[in-house]
Image 1 (cartoon, one colour):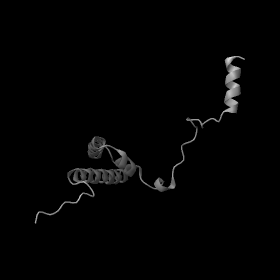
Image 2 (image 1 turned 45 degrees about the vertical axis):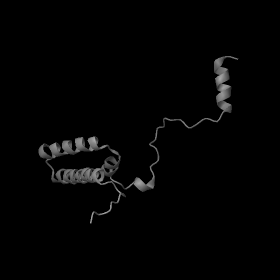
Image 3 (image 1 turned 120 degrees about the horizontal axis):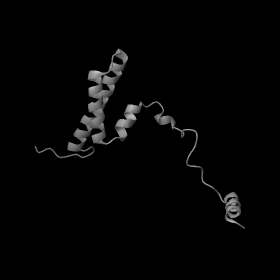
Image 4 (image 1 turned 135 degrees about the horizontal axis):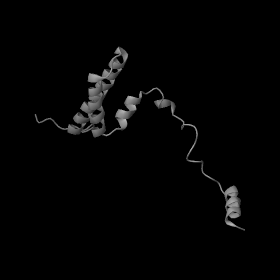
Amino acid sequence: MNESEWGTRHSATEARPEDLVALEPPPVSEDIEDVPAMVLFAARASTPELRVIYRALEIWLLEAPSRPQERELGWQMHQALERELERRVRESIWPRDEEADLPF
């Protein structure tokens, strides 16, 4: 029995895991289907990544968009990133669920 026959015989009898590469996108849970991509990005990105995209978006807004719809959407995304960065700064100063007694 050569190697190819042995491989064919054993691969047919063993339980094989699903292929890692598929031609279709992975299933998306219904919970995040209606969530805007910017929200998912802001939730998963590191603070330096958020700062970079915030500055890049700011520069793009100053120079690029000519259509009012693009400009409005850009400003909304810029403000959302700004709020997320501010939230992270506040949380780094005063972490959530950490209560302190008042000094008086």
